[in-house]
Amino acid sequence: MQSLDERTVLKRVFSYVLMAILAVIILAPFFIGIWTSFLPTMEIAKGNMFSTNVSLDNYVAAFTRTPILRYLGNTVVIAAVTMIAQLIFCSMSAYAFVFLKFRFRKTFFTLFLVTMMLPFEAEIIPNFATIKQMGLLDHFGALIIPFLTSAFGTFMLRQSFMQTPAELKEASDIEGLNHFQFYWKIVLPYNKISMITLGAYSFLGAWNQYLWPMLTTFSNNSRVIQNGLKQLKSEETFNDWGMIQASAAIIVIPTIIVLFIGQHYFKSGMNEGAVK
Amino acid sequence: MSTVLTNITKSYDSEKPVLNDINAEIQTGEFFVIVGPSGCGKSTLLRMIAGLTQISDGEIRINDKVVNDLPPKDRNLTMVFQSYALFPFLNVWDNVAFGLKARKNTSQAEIEKRVNEALKMVNLESLKDRKPRELSGGQRQRVALARAVASDAKICLMDEPLSNLDAQLRIKMRQEIYALQRKLGLTLIYVTHDQVEAMTMADHIMVLHDSKVQQIGTPAEIYKYPANEFVASFFGVPPINILPAVKVSNGRINVNNDFEVNIDQQVPADNFKVGIRPNELVIEQADELHANASVKSIEFLGDEKIVYAKMSNNGLEVAVEVSSDADFKAYDTIKVSATEKVLLFNGDGVNITRNAEDVVNA
Image (cartoon, rainbow over all chains, first blue to last red; front, side, top):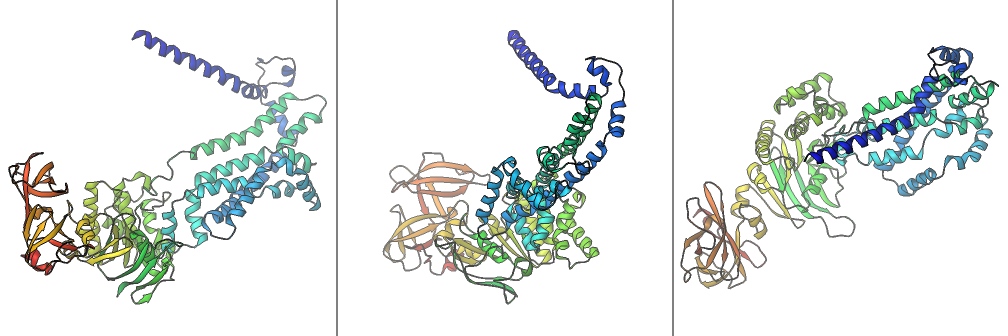
């Protein structure tokens, strides 16, 4: 009996130790990054990672000496507009695919899926040509218009909308709700979790864009944060690593906020009690 | 002022119709129960009355107006779903008010008055701020009822509203629904597969089977004068015993070659059946020489016992109701006979009992 106990204890100790080591390996770069953002660049260059010379100077420098605020502003606007547009357009098209009966519904949906299977990189040249023709290069439009809707979002919301109980639709029919009322008052609230998921996903997607804005923006007026960060690094011959770290820390913050807000809603059981 | 169904037919694609030639008249203010085994099309019929399902053929009139092509909301009715169909993101109060708000022809003060009254009527006032997920099954059911009560529609459709509840709660809700219907003077069209629910609540019962109406009548009529073998065996617990019979002489028939019964009518020479309710069968202990059946099992129900016996002739099983102090054990040999209150069915299962009323009242 006792030996059995010892073995379970040992097993548990082993698995916790393993998990702790893995956690350290995964989290270390993140925390080293945050830590170095508080250190003067000279100390970092000397490799003096345990310096006690901690200050917020790098953050002050990032905000005052670089256009990072401008980049942040651009990105917030672009990401927010992209998110709102995707929520509206994806939910409306998903609604049509689920609740409206029309000819070639399946065909249209398959076409949607086909576009999802094509990686964005493969569409970059035609998209670039289109944007150029429209005269939108180095303009917010170039970063927003191609992302107003997404096949993935439509697909995801369609799967979610299909789970809406048919009785809710029937109950709404009896109360005389039209399609828009049903969409707005029942379908959207019922699928709140999926909507929040898509919102977070599209916001972070827009926030983390790098390749496309690199191609289509060339001035600080429209440059977004990820490219801005790159810009900080190569602009100067001597890289101010402390400040770059501080900037990187700043641009991670919205990601963390979105995840924390999202986590609150990703609780299961939100829709319990609708139908038995 | 009534709901009239004329020659209603529903078929999907080229298959056999789900419902065939349904005719009925549902009086205003009555409790009308549509009952039948699962898959008989009773929910489809209800959905057609509601307007949620298209009618293939026939006509539905509500208060002398043909409503075949009217959308559900213009038929002025409410519906309670088997699954309740509550809105999980709204609290109880808003769930009840939802329909009234959606219709937009009721003032805010009127909505509040109606919803509060409806919640009071189903005893949910104290829970009005809860979400559906914080309610028990019976309470969710009550919210669905309150929604129907709050509406000003005079016709209420219910699709197996009690089938998700446990037995005790079902009896309680049955009484509550009945009381509500009487109090509000609703025309209630109620679908169920449970013959007990049908018998206890209905003013009139429609028995559906095999996509056709088998019989429409009051619970007493349905029980005492079933139109055919199906209706007879659908109502009554345990179900009626159906046994083959042949004519012995005028006024006397032989049942299953096991025992004889006196009857007061002409019968065909053979190829007919008798239906005997379990409480009309009589059994007594008998030695093997005189016995015509043996006891298989016994159910004790408190004030009575149900004896299941196997007839010796062709192994048919019968159920017999005896008083709870009767002393029978499994494998006892017994002699089965019957009173004269029997039902007769011809080869097609149609009730051919003459003067059925006299037989039952005799």
